[in-house]
Amino acid sequence: MNQNFMKEKPVMPLVISMALPMTFSMLVNALYNIIDSYFVARISEDAMTALSLVFPLQNLVNAVVIGFAIGINATIAYFLGAQKQNTADKAASLGTLFNMIHGLILAVVCIAITAPFLAMFTDKRSIIDMGAAYAQIVFLFAVPNAAGLCFEKIFQSVGRMKTSMLCMLIGCVTNIILDPFMIFGIGFFPEMGIRGAAIATGIGQMASLVSYLLFYFFKPIPVKIRWKDMKPEAELSRKMYSIGVPATLSIALPSVQVSALNAILAVYSASYVLGAYFKLQTFLYLTGNGVVQGMRPLIGYNYGAGESKRVREIFRSALVLIAGVMVIGTILCMAVPQTLIGLFTSNPETIQFGKEALRLISIGFIASSVSVTVSGALEGLGKGKESLVISVLRYIAVILPLAFILSKILGAAGVWHAFWITEVVVAGISYVICKKEIFQ
Image 1 (tube, rainbow, N blue to C red):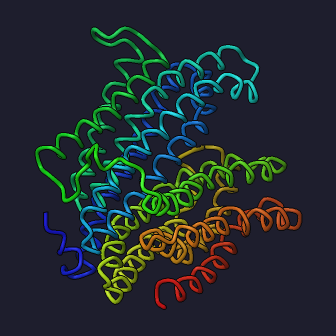
Image 2: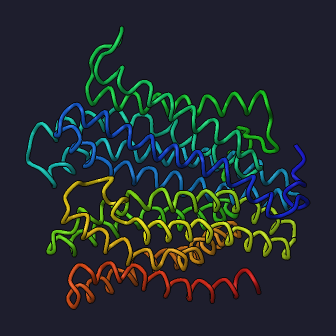
């Protein structure tokens, strides 16, 4: 129950020990998403299309509940570091209640709008029907999913990364195992098609939540969730939302970016290359995000404890680790781009086009380590607005105008150049913000 290890253990080993479980579980989660899509694709192309069209609504729900859970995480870590146990307990209790309410509201709204939302993108009745059937089931689990994500961030806030990893893996593995049984009717399961995929997803989320609850009751953590602490408090609520709302927007911004870039690239028939790139970079940036998840509670705890020097040491260690990941990604994209693109297509023309794109985009990988680390550190410090500024610049304000202008001059290559130029520009701005907010 003693959290002093967060301010006493040597910094680099501590950051690594916190980051590795998160990195592993996030990579497994990315693999699960691919496997899940594989099983749905075997139902029919319409089923896969329906799943893809519902995804933005799922992403909206996840952005809100994960973003707010990040606010809970940072708030708990800060108050534990400040030795304010009661306030940390209240943050965990009230935050969980709020996030479950978020899940309930979003579930009702998304179920109601799914059919008309899908009709905006297709007039094929089978796709709309399958998408609506999937959504009606999967959003019924939005409340337990929101609760499970709260527990994930609460466990991370007290340094229980291995437990968090295990509970996430239990949910993913449960889903992966159930998918073929419930979709295709193997054994005593009836064949349920896309509804089976939705039920398997919901059961996986429930399995993760139940795992957290078992650990919570049988291997206690330093914060408690109590009914009596769920009474709203204005200042505490403001602190959680001041981090959670910017974090939510930061999670949602990449989807806006992809849609806008696809619109620009559609003229050059290069959207497929962009899609392949984002599948590849998922593994790279998920690894970096795993380091951020390990760093965030450490920075919050030490900031609350008044350990400013240690906060800076944690930041530097995380930056070194993330930069190392980006160096590896740069080397791979420069050395074997055709092999990487070849994982998604056998078309020689597309491979050649993708080879050029990967090499240009990867120029900015190392620079991006600065903005990724600074943004995560700011969330840990409770500076959500400053973190959001970096995300808006990186995903929207710099890259989109730049991609549009350069595409008029250089064609599709202009979009690829916009990626690395944006990363360099935003890294410079992030450095300035870092000097003011972290190294002041």
